[in-house]
Length: 201
Image 1 (cartoon, one colour):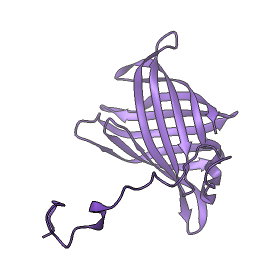
Image 2: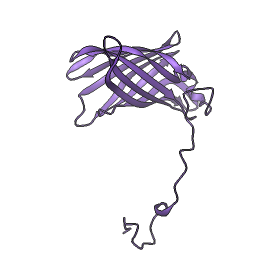
Image 3: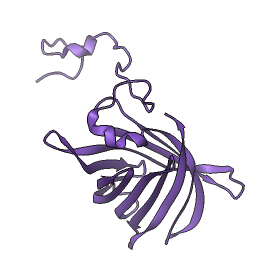
Image 4: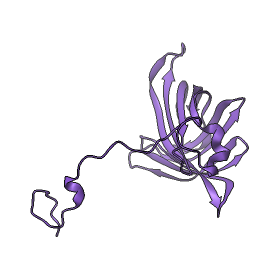
């Protein structure tokens, strides 16, 4: 049996135990198509989404009061056939002043291939720090994307989310979306909608 203690004399110790430090991550990721790695050809149809977006929206659900929020979304790539999606939001008061941090989410959007051919279908994985992970199946039509959950996985302490749907679109250069959620015994209901403008990329 191999010892877990690196001080033990053991000829089977893995070489990384005493290896020197490594350099920083050597591969670039970019939200700006003018710099960084070349975009993977399968992502050409999603090109309008790449960038940093910031704006405001409105939220609500049958179990909570309506609220105003601001949001920043970063969509980037690293030359491979998927996009990295990161969102962070914060609650605004009636004077548009920040009140507190709100939802955060990270995920990946990936076009579905039929052999070598890129289809209009997408797969997306979206994860929150509150213990909810959603697997979405989607379809792209021009600059519009419609997602619906294929599966929802929750930790034991997460809110009882059972399904979701999202509609994204690029309209007059802005990123618009609407999100529905089924949770806490309620069927799919409007939850979030926002308009964000490109601030980088």
